[in-house]
Amino acid sequence: MNKIRTRFAPSPTGYLHIGGLRTALYDYLFAKKNGGDFLLKIEDTDRKRFVEGAVEKLIISLDFLGLERNEGVMLNNNTNGQESKNYPRVFEVGEYGPYIQSEKLEIYKKHVDELVKNGHAYYCFCEPKRLEEMRSEQTAQKQPPIYDRFCLQNVSEEEINKNLKNNCPYTIRIKVPHDEIIEVDDEIRGRVKFNTNLVTDQILLKSDGFPTYHLASIIDDHDMQITHVIRGEEWLPSIPIHILLYRYFNWEAPKFAHLPLLLNLDKSKLSKRQGDVAVEDYIKNGYLKEALINFVAFLGWNPGKGETQEIFTLEELVEKFDLTHVHKAGAVFDIKKLDWINSQWIKKLSIEELYQKSLPFLEEKEFYKNASAEKKSEDYIKKILSIEQDRLTNLSEVGESNQFFFRDTNFDKELLRWKDMNDEDLKKSLEKSLRVLENITDENWTRENLEKILMEKADEKPASPARLAGAMAKRAGGRGELLWPLRATLTGEKKSPSPFECAWVLGKEETLSRLKNTIGKI
Ligand code: GLU
Image 1 (cartoon, helix red, strand yellow):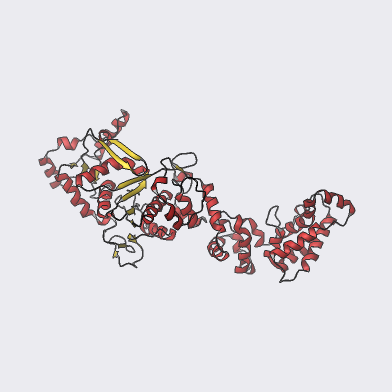
Image 2 (cartoon, helix red, strand yellow; image 1 turned 90 degrees about the horizontal axis):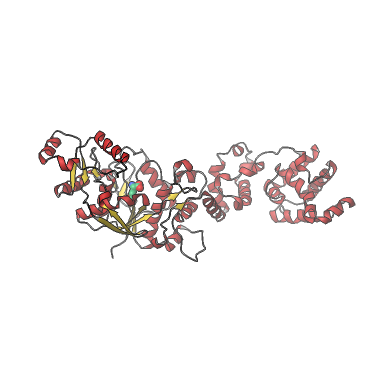
């Protein structure tokens, strides 16, 4: 059997779309799983949608995500590629290039001329206005938008030559045979059938001399010896044209696998309006690449019955992936699932990794910018991270809900009170904490020790007999008498990590100073 070869064929329209990432990932996984090659080619023939810098951005994103290519378009030249003619920083690696469509115009022209010569394609001189009118009439009459073949039926050989000589703008259209059923065995959808009477004579070469997607894509896939075309379901309706082109060129068609649509939670097609679709934005917003890959892998695929593992590395996905477990039904993009997967991947990071990855996010925050040098130190931040790590769903949240670590807290007496405590009891409670904490040495100032010592003290019987009865009734509530005012003093918040964790992060000096400060104000 031939070596398996897949390709990702994005158009440079701005950014890597989440759906594009899914296509690239499945192409990659399928190739790697089967010991094949995965390559990147660029479909830049739609000049109206072209965006400067988009090719480079696509490559940077794929590289960042770890979807390495064996061949095609790259940004580095480790493998002795050819410098691209059209993109200054881009190289083309491999022997089946060019891998950029705008560099193959002559090749496409040669092939389309051959189709015209063999009667499989024809010149069309219809003006846009005529085509538009035809289309609106068809829409009004609820007919399919099919070209009426005016130029095939009414323009003589002589006229064609005259028009060409006079530089009349033209397109070249494929001639679709009538009354035929075209059948394809899709690797995911099974057998699909198309009635050619409903298929229009698509344009193959546009009036600007650029090929359309259909022509270019078929010639490339043939030139690059692609064995499996894995792409989004939106391309399924193009299949009859593609099959006809393979037939007309007398080439063997590759296998096709059309991936399910991506849907919003309300089952509408995933659109920009309902959320971000640019992979770069997810990265910018604090999602880890491992989490994105993991999440996107499950958009339309699962590892099969009985498999409960949900967290997979790229290597594990290569191991597990196969096309038989790709679904036909649309895949719902659920951001909550992505958040959960991201939180799982954040838990797996070492503190060093978490620190390196979080720092750029922290550096953007006002509370961090305004903090003292001490509170920006690596040691201090790592302590915060170690208590936040298990609670984070996203790197951009770092420090966000625990800003008291970075600045002084406000004095709020009502917040400090545990239940109906009066001022005197409140003061006593804080003074007790102060005494206990003063006696802990710097070396013993650890999370575990602080918890152990403070818990012991919190469980001690309250001094006043009147309070004893109440404390006995709810033991856990008794702990609150010591721990709540302490925690509220250190954080100034209703909710926060435990007082032990906060005291540990703040350090002995700062903890005692916050306590003394508060006691002085009661
Ligand atoms: N340029 C097309 C896209 O951006 C590729 C379609 C295909 O893979 O054939 O989706």
